Length: 259
Ligand code: NDP
Image (spheres, rainbow, N blue to C red):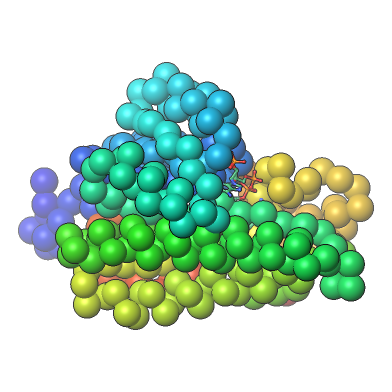
């Protein structure tokens, strides 16, 4: 019920019932946690990643938890794969979470051309394909929300590990987010990003002793995030609760970038 003072019900504006949300890389780590959050908010969740077996296993977990979920096998770096994937979904996409990403720890002079290209292909070009193809559909419908997964690495230089390609790719994600947000706002399509700090996943081995001093001890909260802690922010950016928010890069880093 809406409140006469505000004109809305605070629980309703976060509700994603009846909406379809596609999460790239939704079969593990942060993406998996975001699927659960979006499912809990009522969305039908579509996992889009390459490993069909892992996709199916997370779909089964989501269904066991009472959520509506399915998966498409999709390589985000392949333009045709996006076209086929979107056709297979065969329903309007209300929410796109571009989460798939990769990071190599390598000092600049050791980065082989193919490794630099790998990072850019997945983190930037693949994300761009998704924004462009799903964005076209959203523009036609006059509504939609895209949430890109950037990183605090798009703002700071991590240490002790060097990862120049990754850092550049995430800065690109943030500015692509702002560029599309400005261009598509008149069409009712919002584009935002989250910029997480260290999160306990396969990509970030936070328990390794060589990283503890820089990744954890140096952080204001002296800990990394668990993947589930990112979910509510993505539900917020996906939902009507953030209806006047676009082009935002929301930092979720426990204060890491403050120092
Ligand atoms: P993981 O390595 O745990 O998971 C990566 C996911 O991406 C997998 O589901 C993988 O599935 C998918 N993926 C990889 N390549 C492709 C592809 N070509 N097409 C489709 N899907 C692909 O990563 P995290 O969960 O740690 O990271 C998720 C996102 O969060 C990334 O963008 C990362 O940069 C960002 N991030 C992570 C942080 C962290 O500390 N962990 C911090 C800040 C940002 P499959 O192999 O089946 O395709």
